[in-house]
Image (cartoon, rainbow, N blue to C red; front, side, top):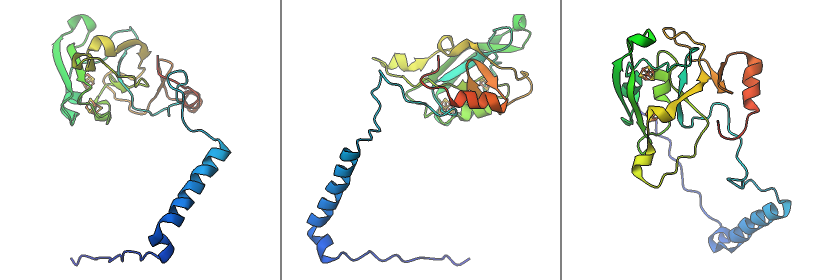
Length: 194
Ligand code: SF4
Ligand code: SF4
């Protein structure tokens, strides 16, 4: 198959453009117009918190089931799906939960994580979600490896059956929201998830 090549000529600069000064003045004029309009786009963080879109991919959350227990069944699909090998899981038997396995250790290394969300998409039982928190600063590297004790949030519940994935959710106020009006409510939320 022939490859089509489009040749783009470098635009020739006129005399005024080659002098640069008129272009600098044009740039300063644009800056001055912004100053005069005084329409700041900056946010005075942390006093002001930026409103985040409802599908923002922040720090991960391990939600709970209806009984307030961890939903994760330690299948390790998220670990396999992670392109940066940021997730490490150690499973243990969970007969007392009525499931085969649960995570004894569930760590995510945020020095590696790129917040792509592949792990959430890979999870077959809605046991992992991206939350709204983004404050990740730490004084040392160990502080950037979060454990399941940090991720597990019993206030975030999933109504999806454990063996029937429900990927169509919006998160807010600790519930899966599947009604349009609930989704609209989430869009009104601002700040970090808590
Ligand atoms: S968000 Fe992406 S990089 Fe981060 S743990 Fe999940 S799959 Fe890995
Ligand atoms: S979070 Fe989901 S994909 Fe990852 S181990 Fe738990 S159940 Fe499996």
